[in-house]
Image 1 (cartoon, rainbow, N blue to C red):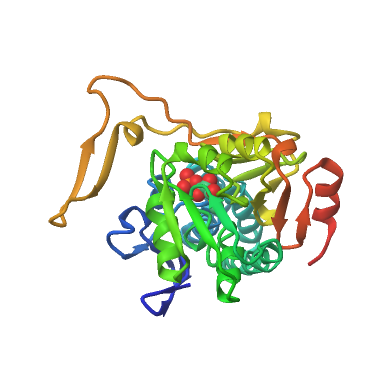
Image 2 (tube, rainbow, N blue to C red; image 1 turned 120 degrees about the horizontal axis):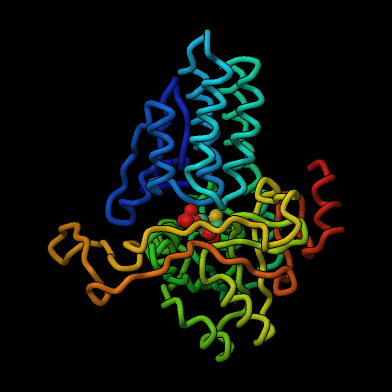
Length: 350
Ligand code: MRU
């Protein structure tokens, strides 16, 4: 995707280093960081400098490749195994992270060079799948539609293109007149900060709405469709996504609005029979209690926005039951969630 006219991907590997866009600084500062070691890459995932299912999957794959390059010859396999455990402990919910680590670790057992090329393939596939999701999803978007999205499932959340936003970018490029309502997505405000920034860069008409405004706008007939991303999709189609997604799905059902999930098949976890088995990350209460941003005179500040001394609960994801999902847009086509349809989808070679 282009930033100020220059093409970027969210994360890439060159030599033994991984380079990435520092998402915690956006939208105020656009900056590229370098992770020189596997440990640096793990730190970037843990602290959400790189976030979003596909992007952390790609970075985790690169981290595994870095571990293979760092591994001493005499201790190669046990070093790799230890590194894998560390990488997999960075963030628990997004399936793409485990998918990428598995693939790159398997290649690393043969050679470090193989690990690097497997990691490059995972990243390349992530971008390609996202582009195809855009093509399938675009077919659902009619001229004049108003679309709500939650969190950030744009190109920053993947290597390129994104999932929920990929159909929106394509529809816009094809000249369809569309309008996007971006949920702010507290506590980290990925919608207000990242989705809004991406849409602005791409020239897509949009506005940011408070998290609690969606149902009201739906009741007024102002939303024609909801498209969200996914962090993990269970075998029956139950979908974990950023906290607050479930509420949008319930409201969409009430008002008869189609609710789509957009995700590559690398987000599906057939070993999770249903949503109750998806691990849900709980993050620090500080993300709820404090907010950071820019003052009018341009200083970056972090301030307390809650009653001093109160605690906060911060589950990072929720699970939307399959019955509330109209369809899942993947790189292989659009499926109605359910065990048979998902099993069939996963057997298709694109
Ligand atoms: O905690 P994050 O920002 O890594 O969460 C991931 C997300 O951005 C969302 O849940 C998104 O909608 C799906 S991942 C593309």
